[in-house]
Length: 280
Ligand code: AMP
Ligand code: ZN
Ligand code: FE
Ligand code: FE
Image (cartoon, rainbow, N blue to C red; front, side):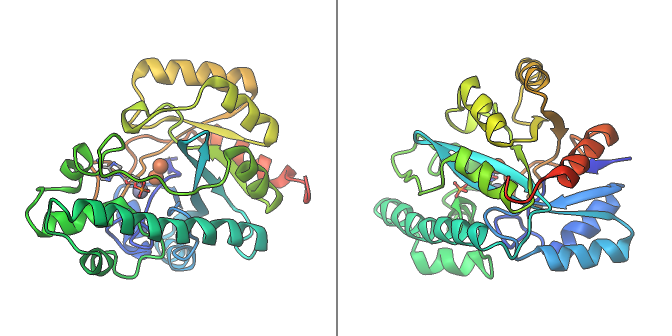
């Protein structure tokens, strides 16, 4: 069983439609695949239908932007009720903040480079959630940088002078909100320090108390040492160890199935779903 629980489509900042991501998943010989677009569930219906046609087991998911004392954190969640009003309000607030923030970043960059807000909006196409990768695409169009990756190494990096953060909910609150909505929350790439500051272990402990179910230990942004450290923390706290690709189509180097979740871990996520008491 090949299980990949972290992928993105054009509904956020991937480069393929939800159905195309599922076709790519079948080609990568996955058996189980989740779509986890940033701060939106708009791609899930299309992906679910395509997965069904392809004979893939589909896991409806999301990657929720969160924060803790100014540190940006990503929280994966699976199977939550997409109609849940509290979740919808939380995500809408973040998406609105993202638009403002992207405009501010573009304002700053446009002082030094040829890029306009209209071009970024055009590059984002029908995306529900706008992000730095769309700004990267506009910069690539202008020949400022050759790829999204190059843009993230300098102009769009977290330490860049053009960087602007955006509002996101406190991570423990988001864990509770997703759990109340029937979701199974998993901390995405908790030790990915190359992309910015990571939270101390005490925050993982608070998240576990709030209802966190898993830690995405096996992710390309983690060194072998980080995987060992995170696996130990997860064992101590009774968290499920997951692994995934964080596929973004051609927008990132990540390949589908490059990291996987074991069938045992997947079963543990499913049983956490079954035991999620409404109103917990
Ligand atoms: P934002 O959500 O607007 O802060 O932008 C961060 C997003 O950009 C994350 O979802 C990453 O997947 C994506 N990203 C980060 N680094 C890179 C990179 N080197 N190349 C392409 N996309 C990236
Ligand atoms: Zn992304
Ligand atoms: Fe992420
Ligand atoms: Fe992701």
